[in-house]
Length: 167
Image (cartoon, rainbow, N blue to C red; front, side, top):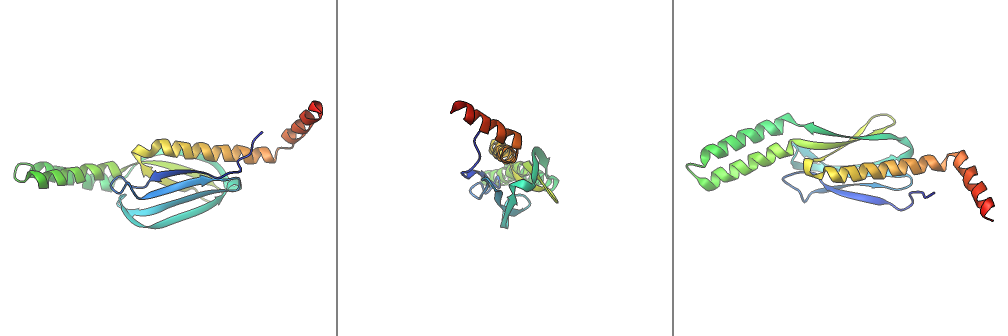
């Protein structure tokens, strides 16, 4: 039986356009720590968000896909403007079109819902980082099972009797 002692960490992008702006989820034997950035329209960084959630307060996690309507609509408008501009100024039209597609992409998010005592905590990332959120979810669930195992007296006595049998 192993317990989660060392801290494990998953880094992820917070925005499709500003992919270099990173956040992370780390899990150790006592806390789930989440650091991210607040964004405007899903792509403009606007401050930092840090949480340290006691592992004992986490009941479960859930992954879902979320669609933000405003960035998708604005992105579609920019893409249509870019498509219309392609005939007069190819470079300007291409820039508008790429910006529009990037905004549409930033409206499609993968969300990790950490259900905790009190209220839920959400971690939103662009759709292409879904695998990293799945890794973070696995880390949290491993931490939860290790925390539960620490307080399970049946496992303690079973382990103790196994050690006596080996001696």
